[in-house]
Image (cartoon, rainbow, N blue to C red; front, side, top):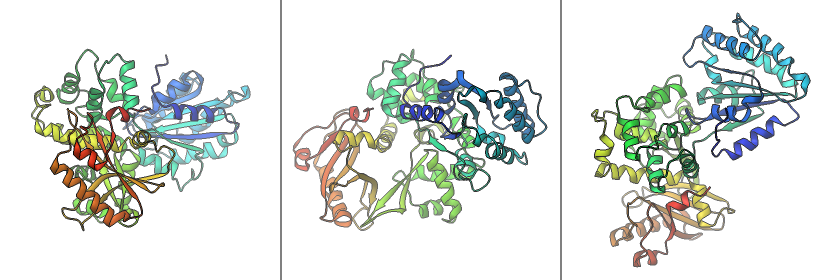
Length: 477
């Protein structure tokens, strides 16, 4: 039975277009664990699948071949376990040849594809031969593959230099929900939470559909967080280790990078990360970082001096659940009501400030829309200067093609935020340093405040000429 699909409008349109094309298609969908890849394909095409199989996480070669045989039996192939993957794909070819004469799309779905590539299994060679020698020549064949092991998907499929080099016809990165999609999902499941409550939930676990599915609409947000995150058998108690082990064969260096970035909230350069984890800033470190970026766990922001540079860009931890886990769950004192007891403490309030900055960074399109600059080309980046007093830093700069620059301050507060004398002085100094060391006199600067509860329009706000972005603006679809 199909379930309600929330969001994913662009992805749905693209998949339907690929399936209806007049050529063979090989579509690779990738993204972090629990983001809804399988759910999307099954809900779109389940009744139209000619064949589907799912890899067994951690399973050996025999277990994966058993999974193939069971899937073949389910779809009418009545197969015993094949001796190897070459035999398996010969069986699959014979099965699909019975569907092709109908002229309808012959949709094949292989889920958790990386699981099949066990040591010395020969899977990739057999899979490549299946596609290159036969399937790619059948216009009816629409092969869709998914995998949470994003590093494997990138290396062996999307950026493959082996038998599948340039064989993917389309790749699709499935990201987590936006604030709007999260709100839509929760409302569809009977939650009548305010937008501030949706924001609080998002800051703890992001827009990961599976995480959201664990919420109970009979409980408050605080009760849900205690039950999911702090209770002994909470649904997300062991998720951190599982997340990284699922995404990466060797999760230890990735966790080391994530922990280093967590310790430096404002971000680190590649060189600084190498020093923190005691490794050279070489090609291996670059690959590790790129894999984290591809999984939406880390984001690379260009930095700007006189020119925009990715080489010296800042890497920042962007995964909300990882940040929450490292901040509160790791080494917790086994208090199953920890969140309810501590949700108004200074420690939690400090975390909210950082998490709200990350929420704003993840909603640049919504910010641009609120500023009325959707149609204007713009770069966005972080800026910091060692030349200015205190190593001045600005978290979000939106550098527009119309020669205007929005210099953004992100502020979380329970009440409308007030710019006081001290804050006015600090912000004015940062703007002056940015103008002096970055854009000079070539651009106009627009002071911009992104707030969770609005901005008090006092004399300091008026003197700065502040543009205000509200929480409601971040919920734009």
